[in-house]
Length: 171
Image (cartoon, rainbow, N blue to C red; front, side):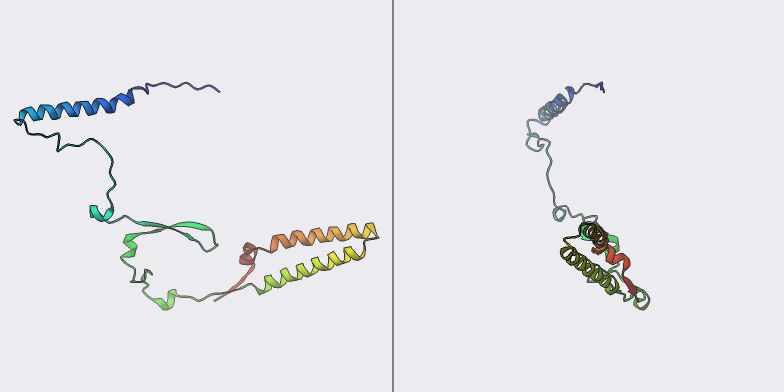
């Protein structure tokens, strides 16, 4: 793959210096016109400067913070100052009718936990059967296949995502 670059990139380095020289010349001309007053002391070179929001008097437009969403994944939250005006002292948004909007939910993962425990028990039983049947190769291979199936099911089910998806939620 070939690329063709068109443009004059060398001129950018000299544009800034030329601009500074022109400004200095203007300052010198202005000094001559104002009978020797030094304006060059009043004008400084171009530079960037950090000005905090406290000194500038401007309120920040919003705040970002890192947190976790409902599923536990990392997420960036934006605290809008316009919505903060509508919030109470604790930072919680004001709610018109708390009886309708506040709900208590309970999540129950007992069923999923029992299912995982059964799989772990079956895994232990199969390991013991493999140890006891060490002389019979066909039986050992058959038990190892069953063990591999149980371990794959266990790896799929023994995590937080599966628990959340299969948990029972009651209000």
